[in-house]
Length: 131
Length: 187
Image 1 (cartoon, chains in turn cyan, yellow):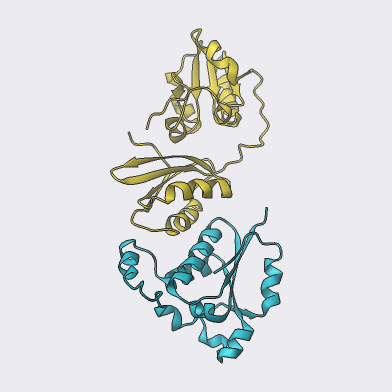
Image 2 (cartoon, each protein chain N blue to C red):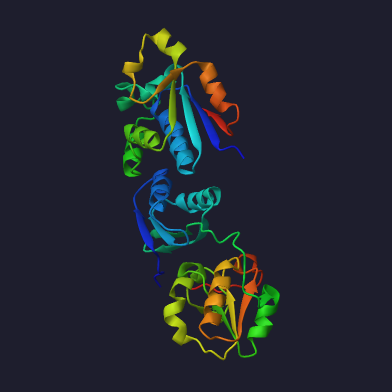
């Protein structure tokens, strides 16, 4: 059985962030080796400012109350937890170049790499998930 | 009734994935063979903690609800899977009920939580770790059929009893993990 979980984060909304980081932290807590490849809008999820105010999908803003009521941790909290448990964050170099972003625009502790960096990790991972 | 545990973890009010994340961390402070009680209100934690335990290799014992709080019981995996069994007098699960009904007793040496979530009706509970201090509760001349989950703790308990002068001690194999008859609960 594979002990790796590979995740591609390619969307930048709040719901996307929860899907990515909940699965990632749960997998890490289950003693899996986890890597997340952040590409295109997914880079929002680890952008220093962007991650603080990720948008809800249009028309779903009323969910904010539900999040508070269910006592769901904030995205920055989940990100910190994930990093504490050894989840590896890989930012996509090509997208960063396109968007004019550098490693300094992102939270500490990320790696920057290309598609092959992720593929190398994911080649023996099961499952590989895309959000 | 309340169940004796070694470590308690409060996850009340926390949503997924927090109960799992906190349980994982709490397990670091639990010793092999000890029982962790996870208190949670997230209903998803019932399925999640069971799956987590199986995935990581710990023993999920069961869950009960008390005043709207879910109490999950997990035993940290020990080294009791492959240890060699040394006690020579043994019988099988299938034989034990008949044999014990002729004046003998079935002594269950698993932890209290394991016993609470399913044991043979009429069996006595004395956890392995308490046995030495509770020998006076047992009769040296009575037949004692010692059982646990996989036969390892009961093997050690049987050796201990024989060493202390109990003469009619028998280890029951393979143990409660393969028990197919009825079980009694006490939760």
